[in-house]
Amino acid sequence: MSERFPAMPCIALGMAAALASAQALADEDTKIGARIFADFTSIDAKSDGIKTDTSGMGVDVKRAYVIVEHKFDDVWSANVTTDFQYASNDSVTQVYIKKAYVQAKLSDAFVVRAGSADLPWVPLMENLYGHLFLEKVIVDRLKFGTSADWGLNVYGKPGEMFNYSVSLVNGGGYKNPTRTKTMDVEGRVAFTPIDGLSVIAGLYSGKRGLKTDGGAATPNTANRVDAAVTYVKSGLRLGAEYFTAKNWNNVTGATVDDKADGFSVWGSYDFAPQWGVFARADKAKLSKDVNPGREDRYFNLGVVSHPRNNIDVALAYKNDKVSGGTGAVTKYGEVGVWAQVAF
Image (cartoon, one colour):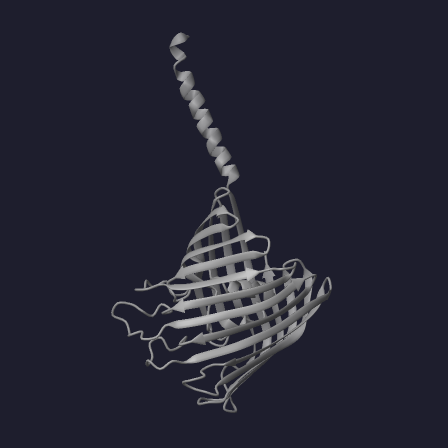
């Protein structure tokens, strides 16, 4: 019998390792979800008074995200989010990796992400606006910014009234992971003096992923400054957002500078658990130096229903007009039903 005793520590060690492995798996957590934006609408689009091919009735799945989140432990986690878009007007389905990052949460005040992750400005404004399924926020809608990019991000909440986010990114957006000679920086800080009220400031500077070996010259640097004041509490959402940009669409152009700016004001109110109303108005100068007078005016309004958690259905009207300066006068009107489903 004594000859078998030496095997006992090995068995004990094996059982301990198995228990440790089982505990590690129990501590890990994987979540799989999705978010879908769809609409059934009628569009009236014109360029210099002539209807374009965009006009007509149809169903679009504007966005569909498949989201996989995995938590290894209290520090380490990962996220992969795919983004696909189908547009009925051109019958093309495009699939992208929107997010693919590893996260290390060292504290509430210091969280690091590496990969394609949320940028500091647009995702925060989308969350505060609350109607992304109907329309992008102004910076994203006019393509003076985007929601995610490849690089490094640090964010945190050092105190109850303050949070921040800073990203060092390639600059081409999540759809373009091309390596560049220099990296862009975007950052923002938010101050919440009272519950629901946020005062937010942000900035962006860089070559927007256009400075590459063998690529076109990039004499100019794209810069953007953002500011917003929002109030979100008890079913009420109010916000005013402003941006000013310099050489955003002129990085590879002539050395002459070009500027743009714009603002967006929006509000919504859920007057009952399942019903709400909303409205928004945007105005922007698109090219104040190169094409002065070029202006975009946009608005939307409608009613929204929340038939159950994670489902929103809106009956709305949207209108956009670009005019002034050189270029065609474009008008866009859309009426119909927009919906989002998340699970």
